Image (cartoon, rainbow, N blue to C red):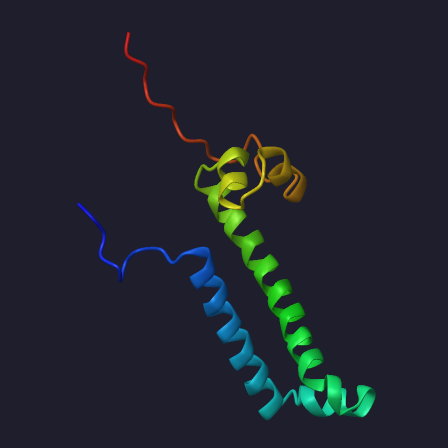
Amino acid sequence: MSRSSSTAAPSDGETTALVAQVVDELTRCMAQHGGDLSADFARTTGQAHQGALARLRVLAGVKECVRHLEDQAAHAAAAHGAGYPEIGQAMNMSRQGARRRWPGLITSNTPHRTPLPRSS
């Protein structure tokens, strides 16, 4: 049974393009409302660089936010029985990389999935 195109996961290129659009829109919104990034950078750097620096500031904030969301998701995955190998795979890193990023995430108190019985 094949999945319809509306439920298929986007490719890496499609995801990157979508994220770029969202960051551009977020940069525009922040410049227009409240956090007037353009004015901040215009005062300190001159007009030529303000747009690029505003976008860079937004990207730094997005990166920090995504890192926090990754931490929450890793903790939730571990709480539901995932181990370092699965968490590392989901993050496109090794088991050791996941263990270094989240030391102590998997402990003796962390629920573990019960392995399937082996047939003899």
